[in-house]
Image (cartoon, rainbow, N blue to C red; front, side, top):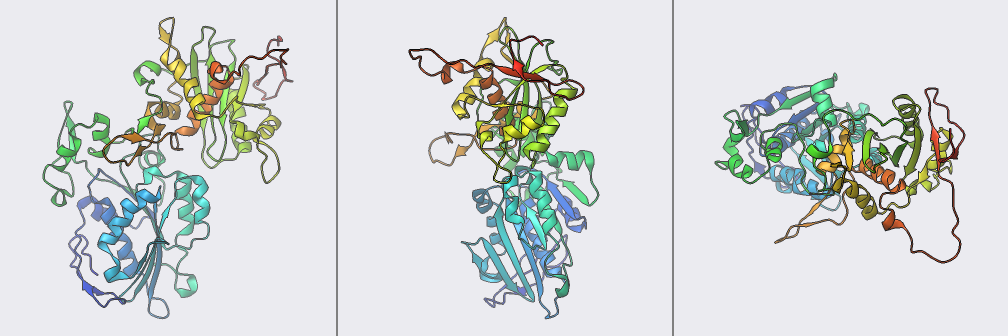
Length: 506
């Protein structure tokens, strides 16, 4: 095996399994050469499609395996994880690129069922584990791993909790008694994410110690509303002539800016769940203020990625989505305290009713309490929404999006609801299915960072009566039982008033 880096001459190597020799040549592009030269614990590369990012990541892991100091027996041992959000994406991208460079014929056997490549060549023994981790709940898959380093492919598709968990697992192989890891760290590559993504916050705003970010030039530049070739683009020598111009033809400007110009931005790759939403119509320029004297309606989605949507229904039937609270890897108790503080602070004095995912009525396996009981103990009494059916939630939101009330949109989304806004604009979408000859989409949207707050909005609107015609049972003869509609107030002191019927004056 050999790989020349930034002009360094290639060397040949011999696989212990086959005895065959293969000469590989890799010359790092300018941005990627700086990436290779960095010693930062976590290094990320962002660039357009076709810019050679994945190849650079593969070569970096191989070079680190060869640079590992030998153990007491003279063998250089390392173990790496290659992470992607789904198994299919992992197989089609990172795994394919890896095996194109370092296949079983020369470098040791790749076990397809385990998705593990055990390499033996020269004096190197290296394990490369290919794993799909697409939610914070999947962090448990990492807890038993002892790694030298890890590569996160298309990092924008993974939550921050997965990145943090990986950082805790690297540098732990080989053990100290075997000499320890000569190098340990994370390498990440991605196409540009949105500006509310953790990558953007780390790379452009926080810039924490131990992290280094590298940004490749785009393949195209936007000039006067048109897209033209970028003379500074990298990897053009390994792409067909006119690659970026042809790839951009017929694509939306947002798609071209993200994937071909390497600009931060948002692109909907599937079918939006809410085609009724038009950002220019439904989102005003300035944040919305709550209408005095009108109760707040809060929707909740539970789980380890909890979300709350704070709304108001005005007397004429219009809806205002005022605010949101979105978290990752957080239990209901801590989230409930954050919600209580938000309601008591920014919205102190307003009457509040809270509706949550009916699944929150299930008892926890740890303390046998339900999410609703935990919230009630915190002073935020909530009730299960009438249904958690996806179609009902969608229709409860789509109805006010589609209507006008006194010539005004039936639902306005405050700029404070940034995640919900992105979700309505297409981030909450139906995944495109790989069906030849036709355009087909999944029946239900995938869970992602946009879905939870949109689901919370659906519970709020369902609980407050939107879509009631869809959930109302058929009328039956005989007397009907009635029940009081309860609400509560949170004031500046964050104390809960006794529950009282909604129609009873405060």
